[in-house]
Image 1 (spheres, helix red, strand yellow):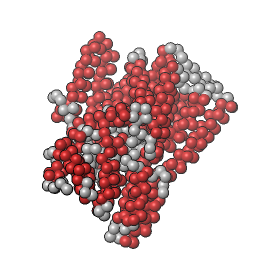
Image 2: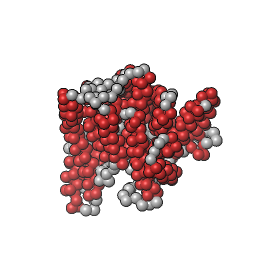
Image 3: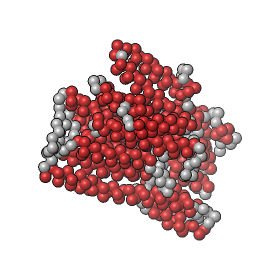
Image 4: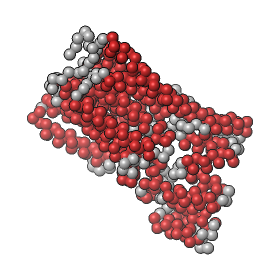
Length: 620
């Protein structure tokens, strides 16, 4: 109920929402070529800052009981509380707190990231209204246009940044063709859907057509199946609900047809059926290994998971022998490539269940909007709901990339909000508001920035340390040249800065120490690597280097220690077992070496390692 002495949703909440949409767009577009991780770290930093700013407003809204306040909102709060509880338990149990807090390199799927996404979703769920849908659509159209133009330029070889890129050139601002195509597809569902279903100005209708065409061109030329899959899922979702609404008698037939089409598509992705040649890709099949490894991690660590963003540290311990034999002993993965499995594996059962319940609640809210008698609301909801379903489809076979995920969570919050609005109006509830008297105005104007500032101080401390690690690693890389002795002191200086940075990723510290060794400071650099190994005993990169270094120096006892540890955390690495057997032979431990040789010949008889093994006389 509106009145002159009430806070207007349209003015107060729309202003907040516009800022969220603007910063969300900037997060997707952001990259910094002067960072060691040029895509994920800048997006991570901006997401933290958005969450810090949003937290003050969110707490204030809850404190003054503004916005939606009904049973659905209480369910949302209970579910995200369960999710955060699981994250907290997992973070406490995480061995390496840097991984837990800031995440792995080129992932950043950490405690802070997911906590930030939850805050953003909650705020959007409190302030979003049907009259905001057009604003959201306009932001999406502009963002999609920018991304598609940049992607098209990359395809044409006109990128203004000289990326060292092992993938297809169409990486847009996401760093990978899969992420780029998926992001464009999620946005295209909204752009194209809004043109067909919603009332837009001529300018935005023209832009929606242009961006949809450019996006489709970029998606096809990215050679990534993810974008195509997202588009198909979004189209099928829209088609299903449109037909059901227009022809309710054929609801069962429509659902059966769309379910059958989805099943055939899924089978095609798995190399079964007539759509195989269109949808199947080897990288889809390999995900089965990642999913099963993640499932096994969860089984062994039900409550806590293996630790926030710790999948990469445990993958080789849990990978199947078939993966090792098929793809190589050194090939690894730092993510389950399935968001629910990733969360269960790394954060445990509470976060996993909380996440699934949240998805179910958003889905039910979407269905509630689809049942709305108001045709304009149905169309608005359908555009957002179809895009969100498309996003969830790619999350089943992909990684939580920040630039993509920010929109999955914003859309999820928007769908929850619209579902609450429909529920409130159906049950004749009213959105809570507060009298705009002097005290409440002061409260609104002062509480949010004060609370956000309180959180901002430690957040800035984290960001500064992260920024230093990123930029200092770039400087180390640019100066590391063993042929230029004059750079040794500079490399040492920056390497020590990284090594002494408490929030520098362990991988960064390892690379910094390696650079010191390459530049001639071998003794100090190797000691730093040994120190890192003591801090991160299951880091296979570090253990592998220690084994190599000790072998080069013929210190076989130390090599055996390192390779024995590798065997514990990477049992199907037959190359390591071969080197371990040779080191044991040097120590005259023929019984142990022959046991390992028999293991290699039994489980990997057709590998190159087995061929090399047969060439050696292992008898004492």
